[in-house]
View 1 (tube, one colour):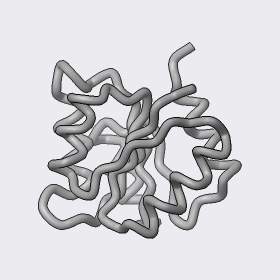
View 2 (cartoon, one colour; view 1 turned 180 degrees about the vertical axis):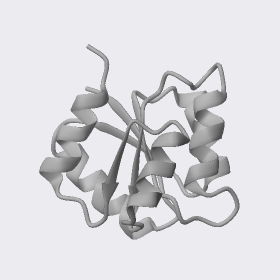
View 3 (spheres, helix red, strand yellow; view 1 turned 90 degrees about the vertical axis):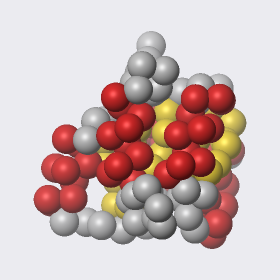
View 4 (cartoon, one colour; view 1 turned 30 degrees about the horizontal axis):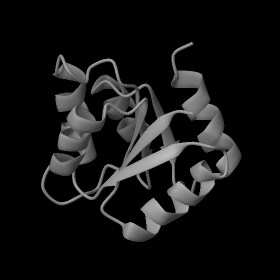
Length: 121
């Protein structure tokens, strides 16, 4: 099954997302900052990345932009998963290179469907 990198500074949020995904057979790895997310994306080569926006250091928009411009990670689809629900946030997130945008709290059905929609093949 697909490997998912969860980038979120909230351990609770990582735990919730991991719980939803592992039930469906996804392998989960996590990072607690944008910087750690970039390192793990390069070293682990996940099939998809779930990206929070509000984090200390590099925020999710900056991290997404760096990953989508890096030759090593540009082909990994990123789905932003954030409490920021303004249309401008969604538009900006997609402009940074994200493939999709989900607003927290996410439902298991939506999360799994979005991940499957961005996976190749």
